[in-house]
Length: 123
Image 1 (spheres, rainbow, N blue to C red):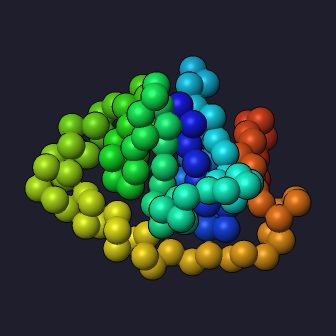
Image 2 (image 1 turned 90 degrees about the vertical axis):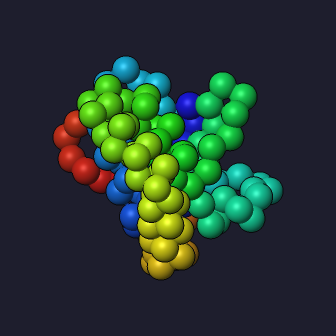
C-alpha cells in the first residue's frame, strides 16, 4: 500500500508519522505527491492511497489504511459506521478544506519524507 500524502500539510505529515509508527509489519509506503512530476490535481485536495491495483481517496483512504494496521483494527467498525451515516466524508472534506499548507522549504529538498527510527518524532 502506498500512501500519497501532502508534505506541505503538517496534519498530513503528522498523520503519516502516526501510521508509520503503527505499521508493525511494514505494509505501508509513504510518498509525498509533491515529489511526483505530474500529479493529479485531486491529490492536492484529498488523501490518496494505492493498494493492489485500486485507488482510495479521502475518508475511504483512511479506512483502507486503518484496516492494514492491527493496532487500529478496533476503529474499523466505528469508521464504517461513521461512513455509513455520511458523517465521515463530511468531516473529512471539512478538515481537508481548512488545513494549513506551508509551501516553503520546511524540510530537506523542499518536501518531507516519512522516516521513523523509533528515537524521535521528526519527519
